[in-house]
Image (cartoon, rainbow, N blue to C red; front, side, top):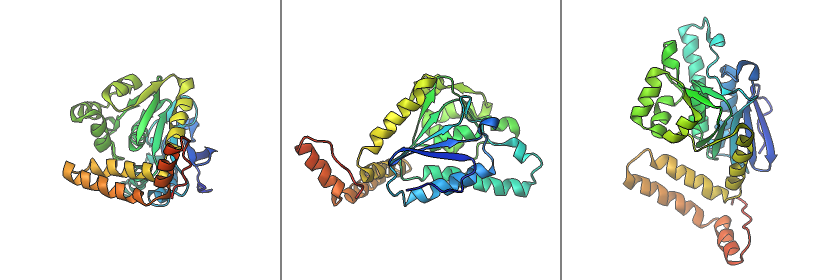
Amino acid sequence: MKPPSTLRTLKVEEPERGLWVVTFNRPEVRNAINTATCEDLRELFGPLAFTPGDLRCIVVTGAGDKAFSAGGDLKERDGMTDEAWRLQHAIIEEGAYSIINCSVPVIAAVNGVAAGGGCEIALCCDFIYASSTAVFAQPEVMRGIMPGAGGTQNLPRAVGERRAKELVLSGKPFTAQQAYEWGMVNAVYEPAELMPRTLEMARTIAGNAPIAVRQAKKAMHQGLQTDLTSGLMIEVQAYERMISTEDRHEGVRAFNEKRKPQFKGR
């Protein structure tokens, strides 16, 4: 599967088949998120909800060594009418939600500041690895607004309601180490190790049976939105999808033949 050729603010690289590295590519403004960025996210991730093709894992990071994304581009928003702001924010929502709804696993590699919308985009990913120099923040209330790209929902699910209220209502920044201790970040690495370690995990995921990976992600994501009994039903339905696949047969055959399976995603 090839990324769109019309992207303006995102750089997409494919270091190997089935693996994309998506980079916020506005380092001159610390990768601030403008309208074009969210249109690009929507265009890139939108189709991946149902038609991922041979794509198996995605890494999202920021250009340069200072910022993952410093958040919404307030210079672009300066002087916007209320109606223009509402229309722009709808595009922001669509871009963020398209990451959440992506059927392929998405890993955030947070290499610097992740503030406001940047922090929210990281939280939209399936999990986060961070540089030891990374700093997170949800400072929207200091600007007369609030998180609106999933922050008030994803952050409490990651760190708990009380901690999230403290962070969102104060707007105070927090470190990568704090984010790790609170359960928001899965691992903290030195800056030079962040991308190698993230890509190592991405390759591990990409090497597993893609239908199984997508179904397991779907079962966890949807199951956590409901009660346990309903979640167990979602799990069984997801499991049933794999029984008749070639990959299921190949996985069992490879185990018994003591070799690495060759999954084809069918």
